[in-house]
Image: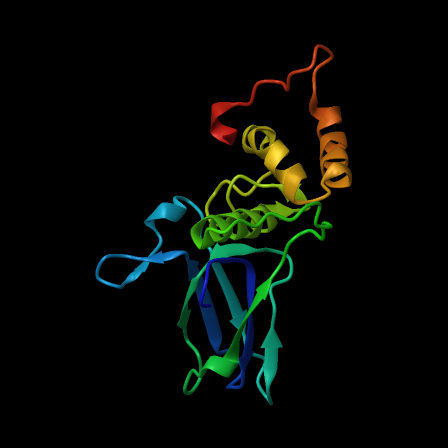
Length: 184
C-alpha cells in the first residue's frame, strides 16, 4: 500500500463463481524481502471473499480492520493489477487541536508519524496496536498517550465515550474484576 496504514483493502475482481480470493496483511517484510507475519502473534490478519460470478465484483470487509503495509493476495482470478486493490484508511474523526512545526525536517516527520499512529490507534476505542492480537481498547497505552493525544486532537468526546463503556465493568471500589487466564 506504500506506507503503514490502518483499514482494509477494497478488492475488485471478476471470475468464476466459487473462486475464493484471500488477502493476508503484514506490516513488514523479512530481511530476504518475504512477507512476514510472526510479529502478529495469534492475529490471522486475513480476509477472504468468494466470488458469485457473472461480472465485476467489489469486496470491502467493513466490519474489521487491519494494521498493514503489505498485502499478499492468493486465488485472484486472472492477472492481478494495481487497480484491483485499493487501501482504505479508517479512523475515528477527531478535530485537529494544534499544529507543531520546527525548522528540523526529521522532527516534523516524527510529529507527522505520531499523528498518523494516533489516527491508526483511534478506531472507536483507543487500541494498543491495530496489526496484531492487541486491538482492543486496553487502558494502559491510552493513559500513557493521553496528553499527547489531547495535544494533537480534540479527544474529549472520544475518551468520555470510551470511559463510559468501561464503567459497567468496574467493581464498586474502582478496579475491574480479575480475568481468567484462559480468556487473556
